[in-house]
Structures are given as C-alpha cells and as structure tokens.
Image (cartoon, rainbow, N blue to C red):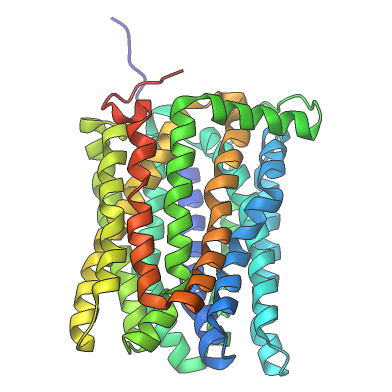
Length: 415
C-alpha cells in the first residue's frame, strides 16, 4: 500500500504562523495609514483632486519603475528573508518622518507623495521576493489555503484597522496616527527574522538583467492562462485606481459622511474579505479556482455602482455603501486567492519570481495610471460620473476570462 504524504496543518506550522503574523501587523498598520494619510492630505493640507490622485499613484508607481527588475532579482537570490527584513526597516523609518515633519512645520503634500513612493518601492521588492519565499515555507498542497490565510490577515486588518485609525486620528491627529504603521513594519521585521525554515530556493543563473526580464515577459505573454490573469488584474486595478483616487473626497464632500463613517465602510470591506477568506478554500476545492475567479469578477461592479447611486440621508448612504463594501471585500479576496494559486500552478518554478513580477508590473502599475486618470476626470467631469465610468469599466474584465482557458471550470494546469 502506497502511503500518501500528509503535511502538518498550517495552523500548527510555526514558520507559517510567523509569516502570517508579519503580514497581519503590516496590513493593520497600512490600514491606519490608508485612512490617516489621505485625511492628512485632504483635511490638514487642503489637497486638490489632482494631488490626491498623485498621492494614490505614488504608491503604485514603483511597480512600473522597478517591478520587472525586482522579479529578476528574486529569481537570482538564494535567500529572500534578509531582503524582506531590510524593506520593512526602511519603510518604518520613512513613515516616521511624517509626524516629525508635522511637528516642525515642514509637512506638505509633496512630502506625503515622496513617503508614499519610498514605501511603495519597498513594498514592490518585499512582495516580489515574498512570492517565491512562500513556496519554501509552505507545501505545494497547502498554497491555496496559505494564500487565503494571507487574505484573511488583510481582511482582519481591514476590519480593525479603520476603527483603530479613526480612534487614533481623533485622539492624536492623523499625522501621529501614522506612527502605528511605522511600528508595524518594525514588528514585521522581527517576526520574519524568527523564521527557521531553510531557504532552499535554487537561484536562476544570471544571464543579464534584460534577458531575464524578457523571459518573464514572454512567459506571461505566451501562456494563455497567465496572460488572461494579467489582463484581468490590470483591468480591475485600473478602474479601482480611478475609484480610490476620488472615494475619500466623494464621501466627505458629496455625501457629507464624517471620517469615522468612512473608516467604518472600509471596515465592512474587511468583514467581507474575512468571510471570503474563510470560504474560498472550501469553494475552490469543490468548484476549482477558475470558476471562483469568474464569480468574483461578476461582483466587482456592485460596490462602484452602489457608491455612485448613494444619496439622501447620511444613514442611508452609509448602510448601502457598507453592504456593497462587504460584497466587494469578498470578491477581492476570492479573486486574489485564485489568481495567486493559478499563478503558482501555471508558472514554471524557476520563473515564479519573474512571472509574479511581470504580473505585478502590469496589474499594480496601472493603478498609477488609474489614479491619475481618476483625479483628472474628477476635475473635468465631477466625482459621481467618474464612479459610473469605473463601474462600467471593471465589468469588461469578463472579456479577458471569457476568451481564455480560465472560462473552463477545470483547475488543472494548462501548460
């Protein structure tokens, strides 16, 4: 009788728990900054819609500038953890400059944009090397569950982070609330340093940075499933960037929602994500990642449309937007988990860093274009019409999936 290997459950794997905890604390800190930084820009510094678009774009611009190079670096490295720790430490120091600049009266919108760019650069490198590192820590049969765990950490942070951010903003003002994010980066570095699993990644032989980048680009461009994933993610994130560039100003100035309720809506997004992370592993085992990807895509326009329709009393807008945010949270988590699992399944092991970097270059890079587009369209057309454009645009994601092997329910490799 042939024995079947049964890996230790993830909840009992110390190193996975450390990696998951590191993700949880940084996501919580990021949620605080996600509210505190725009509030600092819009309320304290009087940022315009164009400046808000630039602030949102600064976080994702590094994907366009260094995303592909980071992928080649990730495949060359034998050890990924030292790079992840360095990124956390640099991010912590950079975020700490915001309250310092506020104290001495030097804080400006360009300062916030610069901080967002530096932290975004560290995030690009961290996430790129973390993707192949996950394959070292987690057994192949547990990767979908592990990715869902990361998404649940994001969802929990989305639930608690905005409430914590709102409380901190009220107690110590928005610039000082950002110190929580700086502390979260420090704690993440400490947790990652405690991981003991030997890094068994076999570095790809260096053949020149551009030759290696082209290999990653060619793999994504020629592989039908990876190409469709990249196009789908790019479409979602472009129109998501358009939406997010205007959401805070729209909620505050058009719907007259107080900052606390804006944070509560974000928390509902996190609750939806938490629910999604809990059920996605079971649903993918039953229906496959491909079918779940299609279902998630159908839910994306709901949040944008409901937000554009919101009007009347504050309580009604808040209830409608909270429900739609919860739906959106479930869709985002389901799509992200399935996209990550399919990428790990389809990409050759020696190219995972570059395939992930190529996809991130496109998928995250277009957030920059979407954010800038949203800011400009907000100035030209007004805020509400641009939300409708986002809702219609994100629905076109279905074309990418419908014209690819992802439209089939099977979840086996298409290589």
